[in-house]
Amino acid sequence: MIEIHTAKEIQTITNTYQKEGKSIGFVPTMGFLHEGHMSLVKKARKDNDIVVMSIFVNPLQFGPGEDYEAYPRDIERDRKLAEEGGVDVLFTPAPEEMYKAESTVIASVKKRTDVLCGRSRQGHFDGVATVLTKLFNLASPTRVYFGMKDAQQVAVVDGLIDDFFMDIELVPVDTVREEDGIAKSSRNVYLTQSERKEATALYKALRHGARRVSEGERNPEVVKKEIRGILEKTSGVIDYAEIYSYPELKSLKTLSGKFIIAVAVKFSKARLIDNIIIEIPDDQKEDE
Ligand code: AMP
Image (cartoon, rainbow, N blue to C red; front, side):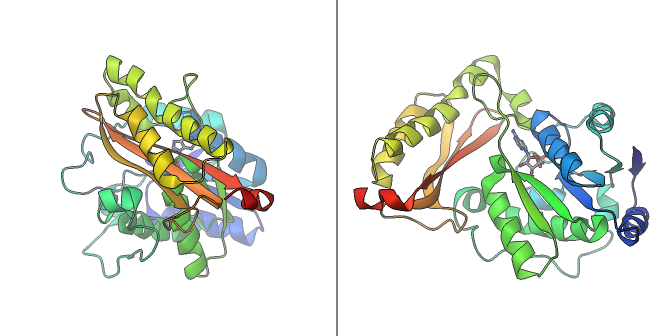
């Protein structure tokens, strides 16, 4: 594995791979790697000649009062995990490298951001789209790998690639969970012991929602209310518990087609998110 810090160097190396006709799988991350990240690497390793991973805690996607400074970092450990996972090129730029001077252009995401994390974290997805546009230009990926744990991010990246005619295949990867169901997340280290136990409520609530749908419930308000009921038993504050069509993220009067049940709960030092995507096959439409 080679590690690169500058934009110029990574561009040179990925241009060479491209000229050699090698496919490049790209895994953008903010580091503090866990098995969720490594499942993206595993998939990228399988599909491509070269695997590029970036580790960059992107200041632009954190709002005022969010955890940019406190975001967990451990580059030594990450380096080891990336190498063991089969990453060929690790890109670890400093913030000054990615944002050299005052920006001339910043991406502005127009759709799929007025709900869920986009509503709670104003400007977050503009920051995500901006850094990803930069990173995609540097990594020249054939395929990019994103976790469905951040399903709204996948929906936004899908729009970014599509709208800007980027010749990149987006590969969504299923959420990796702890044994008790909690989605693996770099922020889980900030849960207290009792919050760690309570946090199982997120996936429990989602599974409850999925079960109600499979039992035939088609009213999103009913499902949302029951999910909230489960989350309210924790000491956390519910940021949202919503259901939208996926990937468009539009409101639904009746549950049909493909939709997301998504929850976010703020604990004392960590805000956790999770979701489940459900598709009601067309032949069940008469139930509605
Ligand atoms: P992050 O470092 O949190 O920005 O995440 C980098 C990538 O890893 C994103 O595409 C995330 O969706 C993905 N990811 C994070 N947690 C998980 C998980 N538990 N399972 C699968 N992918 C994940």
